[in-house]
Amino acid sequence: MKVLLRSDIDGVGKRGDIVDVAGGFARNHLFPAGKALAASPGIEAQASAMRRSRDLRDARDRESAETVARALVGTTITIAARASAAGKLFGSVSAADIVREVEAATGAVIDRHRLQLDEPIKTVGDHAVRVELHPDVIFEISLAVVAAD
Image 1 (cartoon, rainbow, N blue to C red):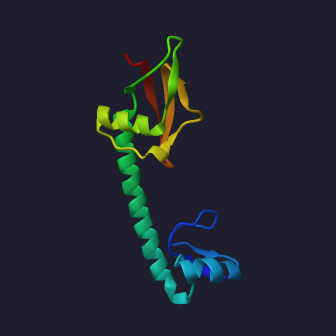
Image 2 (cartoon, rainbow, N blue to C red):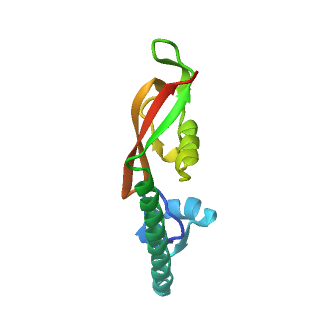
Image 3 (tube, rainbow, N blue to C red):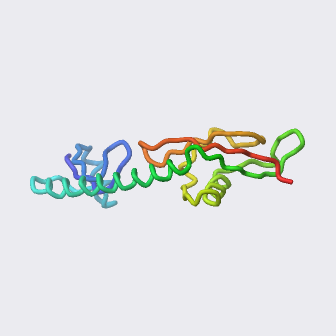
């Protein structure tokens, strides 16, 4: 069954795409949730308007992500945390801590879910944290974790 997607759906398509899905999936999930419309011959104009809107929003989001990336690349964010004499932290540095320090140091606002920490930061020293603000804008933030007095 051909449907016009009204929102992005993982594994199916993006807003404004006309895709072919199973009839049951469309009737039981997409239509009741308002995520799709049945594709008809006259719906192509609406689909192209949705795609244009999506492309404009994507370009605007990418531009703002690049602006934030330019501000953060090359700067080192210092985070003070309680630590033992051996350099082990009492606890860890979380994504929320990193976001708070980035905003205080540079004024750039980042969603904590955009930070990709492979494992919690539990030691004093220099660390690199990967940030994905947009699928095309991926960079690393340099962190210097120091022992608080």
